[in-house]
Length: 418
Image (cartoon, rainbow, N blue to C red; front, side):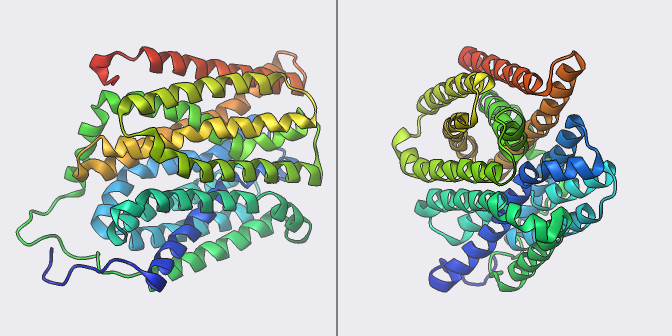
């Protein structure tokens, strides 16, 4: 390290400032991820979007987010979380401006992709900063609080956004989001400490960007990484695709709930998810650190997800929304996977293991969100009505996740199955 004194541990107002800035960024990230679940009818009506176009446009967020993960891991190590996240939030603000001005599906897609790229560091930057400024014993707690902040962002995109639509319109919502992102980025740049943004240790060789990317080779060669990441990616990616878009159209099309009542159910669904994350923070330490214990939790959680997806596919009536809350509860088990994957690698590879995980999982989120719309349109093309097409797509979704469960259970030990 440099000759300067080691940075002090963050306490009091400094700790609140660090957490507040990063939590605000993640609040916006998660809210923008999910806002189209409420805005879908307005977007489709004004621009004439098909289900496949709606899914592809909304999923552009995940595609861009995934594409950013590999360079993100290197940038965080090189430049520090303050500079990286503040700069990227500026990109997200620009994306909101493009989205607000969009007059075509292509322009919506570009705006949405810029948003995804811009918020791609919101969680990883915060976790990197917390490792620098807070003791090891507080890391899990801080991560849980970040998930709470993100879920609050989703809650704001339900009833509050529905209330704001008659006043602002969907374009106004994105103008407001652009202003908030810009303000958070400026606050992050100006208010956060810079003690950790220092030169490399004296005598240490310079590492090029290309050489730093080589660390991913060891990560992607790990059988354990792929066993955990493929299962979490496909199944959790599927759930997030539902939460951030398709749950809204499902409530409207399949359960027949429209307008304010639909926004109320989306709020209740995401409030239930927030409580699940809160509960998980208490439960996680009791699971243990052994790989076998985590594998049992993932197996049971995935089995529950498949059963609930099939139940959702056949359930009728507005009261069936409770099945979605149960689905959310089962899907939260995958939150345990990412930090365990990071711990499976040496400390100098932990950041690249975490961003490698994000690369896979957000790629599957993109594929799931777009693919669900494609499958709905395919079943409509075969003569099914819209409700039946939604139900058939969910059965196909559950079948894919059941195949992932079988692969996870049968994964050979010589490939990293333990």
